[in-house]
Length: 232
Image 1 (tube, one colour):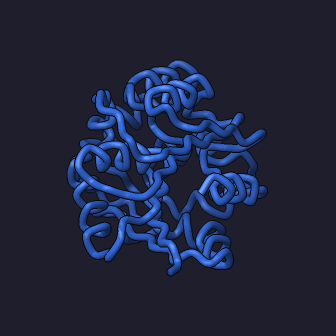
Image 2: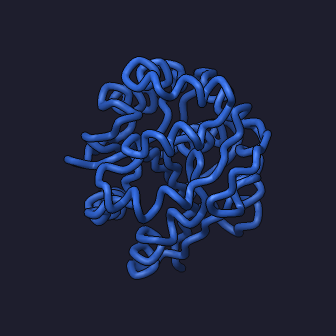
Image 3: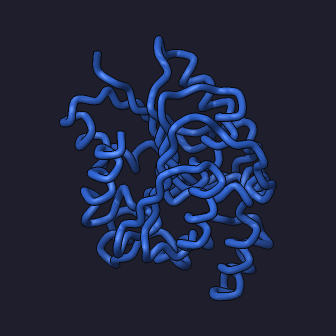
């Protein structure tokens, strides 16, 4: 029987971010791949304000998993990684991959770091406009200009309410096998934070040399895909 992978996208993204590279790759390797849009993320490039809680996003993941006959492998990117961590409090999967994930300690430190380095985000944050902040500083997501040109216009508005929910630390651990994966050139999540996530869950840690925050959209995305497949 083919194993199933469920992909959980991150902030201001949609299921499209998996369709570009990762889903074709993993389908070619024989996996059944499932992607879905978090509430309010259905329309690429949408600037319409949305207001969902982080709990709403976690429930959306539960809803997708409940449709399956067997527990899948789940890959969560960035905010999707924190959604996955909350899911593991009560949900079940065979294995979990936290990719460029918000650490269990929460997103507050990362947010302060971004504000300190890029004070131009402050007006956007005051307006609750997370998409505006990433549009102003797309290299927080992508590490090459041609990737910005390809993908930044496809990003959509994000719920500021869900963003604030990312500040709350997670205390629970999990017995599910976990891989923590991140890029050495990630401008949002540091290697130290990736290490702390791996330590928290007693998980394997893999750092992709030169990798950006959006590892699944990198020019050399195969490095990340290979690392995940080898670990699975």
